[in-house]
Length: 205
Image 1 (tube, rainbow, N blue to C red):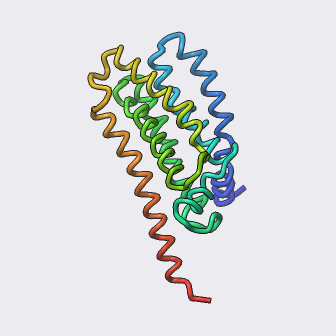
Image 2: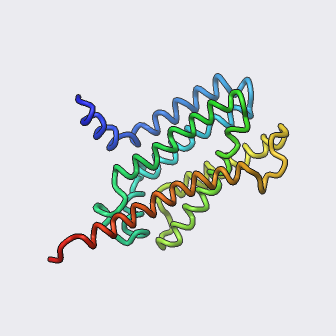
Image 3: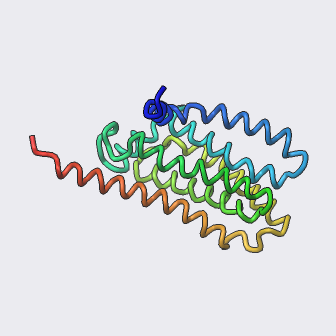
């Protein structure tokens, strides 16, 4: 398989292995890290929890991309602004940064404090998207509220007990999490603008 073919395979199938990776990492962390440090276990669980979230978004039951195109961007569900390339670029950035900052937390726990705040903000955004799209359920909503928010609140509580957070409601780490969310929002805006410009350039039939 040449590199181009491998890229296309990875682009179309990466989300299908999210569940396997999430289960493997959860078991590994529970066996190796949890007995040593509950706080560190909570922080490192950020990555597998995000993988579970993306399994719901893109695979079981999936459908987040058609939802965005159809109900948010008001475009064709398949040929809308959000396509496999866009999903790969946006989500892989989080896949890269989250494990890196999780590992950085092994020597400096402060580097990972933004992640629980990111999950709370992301859950709110999923709820807002559901309201805008006028749907009771949207792919990713369940894991965002049933997994991410409880984990985030628990982790923030542990960080407070450890003296790593002075004010849980407003701090630099909350601002850092908003920066990650802003990146995702700007990426979505650019996709929509690009799509609209592309439509304007098509000849009328």
